[in-house]
Length: 213
Image (cartoon, rainbow, N blue to C red; front, side, top):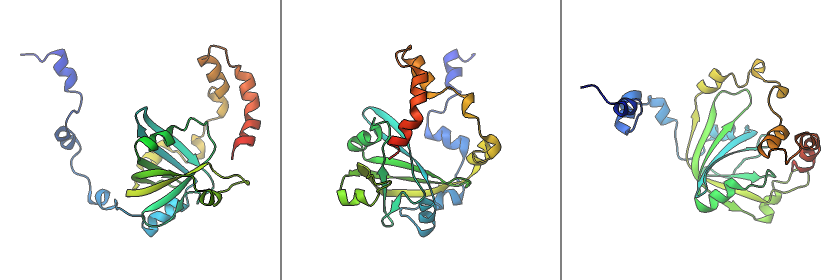
């Protein structure tokens, strides 16, 4: 009996943990033991050397993945279980913060220019607006409106394979900005001309300078 089209299609997808485990097998010992429930001194060095972290959150409106960046050390390690991330000015969508209020679960991915390994953290978060604490994160005389306080559940390093394959830090991999659409041209196309792309692009450098902090 020939399998139906539906059966053939389903055979191309993994739909159970048993199938997944059969396909990938067991994780190597190092991949398991690198995961711990606290910020070790070695992991702390990576975090404090990172100028860039990606934050993933979840809420009733859906998932969100958002970048955060500042000079290295902008994420402060308070103790072996807690770190603080200043929430600088952005597009004011507050997607990440809205999600944290609904669902405190959070994931972080730290990157360091030139370094292949990344640091991954899974934990829980809350939003702090203590004025004195916000003042400790002042940049150019401006305080963040809030601080994301993260309690670490698990932390581990990700091996450099993805960054090696992508050649992310190789200078030869860089793409000239002019080869991609400008943000203004994207907005003009999406709004069917209601936003003038050229005017938007022209005004952006000054707007960036004024709103960076």
